[in-house]
Amino acid sequence: MPELPEVETVKRGLEKEIINKKIAKIQVNLPSLIKKPPIDKLMTRLKNNMIISIKRRGKYIIIIFDTMDYLVVHLGMSGRLLFQPKTLPHSKISNTIEKHNHILFFFEDGSKIIYNDVRKFGKMWLLKRDEKLTRIESLGFEPLEPCFTVSEFYRILQESKVNIKSFLMNQKNIAGIGNIYANEILFHAGVNPLRKANSLRKDEVKRIYLQTKNILLKAISSGGTTMIDESYLDLSGNRGEYGKEIMVYGKKTGICPICGQPLEVIRIENRSTFLCSKCQK
DNA sequence: AAAGTAACCTGCCCGC
DNA sequence: TGCGGGCAGGTTACTT
Picture: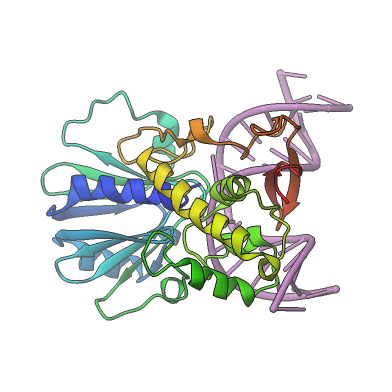
């Protein structure tokens, strides 16, 4: 589900709601979701910890505690973090959601964070201050950071023969882009997703680069993308509004908003890929 | 090195 | 009405 803009939105929600809160109790309903350490160790190590800051790297959320331990969370396809204030307004929590509540963090003030995940693809790791997680270490450029420059982008593209869509979605190249935004970026840039990375001209690279920053920033401003099935909701259960700006993703019977020709759907790495073959060369 | 497939899961939608 | 197949904002592992 969640790509960079959705994860960033959740991260900002966490910053607003749980900084300086102390964990009173943890309830683990699905232990297999926690990859490290063993559950009993995690429980004892987290108890009475205070959250001091929240970070994001690619699609990973990083929660840092006063002990300098940190919890890494990946939401997978359908994972959600939900915040419930002390007195919950009762209405927002349906039975279907409760069924998939896998981990609950209870804070001293009576509020809580619930990790909910229908498909159980999400994962968590609790790491010590000096411990590293290979999956994070091997991530590529953070696309909204200044170090991701157009010349660096051009350089790494030259080293690869994969199609540009797979390149953008490979987290070792750029971290945070998934299927929705890869489709949207390439449509806005007017580049066919099947083009080989090292075949792109400088002007095409520039367009992809600018659209990557532009679209991710706009999507963050809109609170991410919630499709009709609502598989993404933010910390408070609110939708993201970037869905209104989506040009091609998910539009199986759509027409190109630029030229009016029917959109095409192809499969790349077994993922649906939407494009206008007239506007994307 | 690239590209394809399967695996991990549950739910929903479509066609028969 | 029900059953099976295909598909879903992700990632990894294995094969060709």
